Image (tube, rainbow, N blue to C red; front, side, top):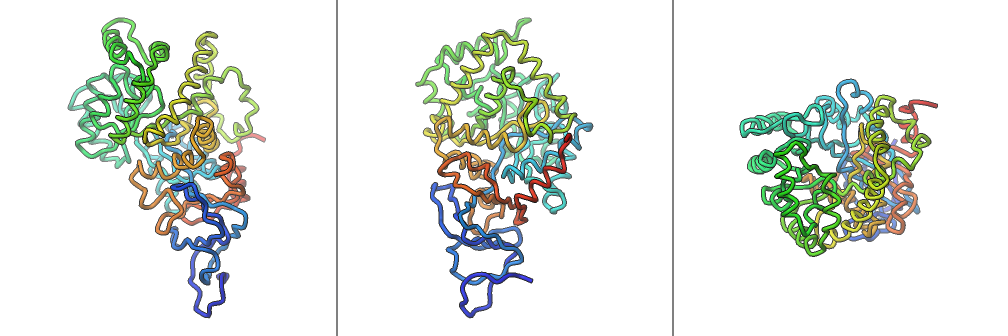
Length: 467
């Protein structure tokens, strides 16, 4: 029987699936909170947001939001499902971790499990699989001999056309380009062809290309800050030419070989020009500060005691070894430089924000990315955005409405607004006062289905791999 809530007006109560009363609604657009609100949900959609007591409601499920805060569900705009068929179950098992940390939408940034991801999307939408809504790029586009298995390898115009045909047949949500082997010419040609087809693009970028060239060909977003940082060098032209020349030798220069020179030639004027260009062309960026910091410190932290490690399958844990082994081979100088670079990247974030560049919060969690735990790493990313100089409101925008805008879903997602999907997080403390309060989760709603803190804990316990 539905509970009747609200004032005794004498009129028949309006009936909803879920009603949250006396909640403080966080408006991520303005950074203000609307106190003592009632949020009514039906059919997975927010139907009313208004002061409590405005009218009488009948609800199948009610939540008391007294002294609590309602936030749109968080978006992780860079994570991965990957590892081949043997890791399908292991990848699926982490889906509840996203919900348990308040993340109701993720963007899969390229992998080799597209058929499985499509099945998960259908089951999540049907309510038979607990997990976040998934946007996916499907396989990455790269050059011949690509680093990641499952990549679509292109060099010629025909190969590019066929790769994009394949992605469109898969009905991917966007195109992800990777830079392990792709040539300058093929990279720019992919961007141009994708733009002509109306496909959204994001990428790593070969250092043989300037960011301004990629933007000119229609690049919609750049992943990580390495490629933005290159454009902040006062010597970008000469360093790009040097990389291009090296490709004709036995020792081509890659990203990590060039980074010290970029650091030494960082030019605030070049950075300002770059950020202005990005804002003008609406080219977004996913900073991924958390993984940058974690990997820079990986040899100094004992991750064997991480509480979340118990919820990651042994098969995925095994993929962490490669990065750890590589880090242990680094010299002390290289380790120190990695920390310097992390600090410099942090300084770019508030500058990008001030210039009007769309910032997207992404964790880069997934197999092979050591100790970047699904869910918790996105919370860590949001906290680092604030540590870098953003306000809590700006950091929350990067993890909510900005993702929805980038994916073209802002009409249905990203704010606590009538008509939008009921993907919501109930917090025990105010995130506008302290961004760490995004960890104080009381309940999560996905398309209107309520998961209490106890239910979220049960979902997570079910995937525990060791006592």
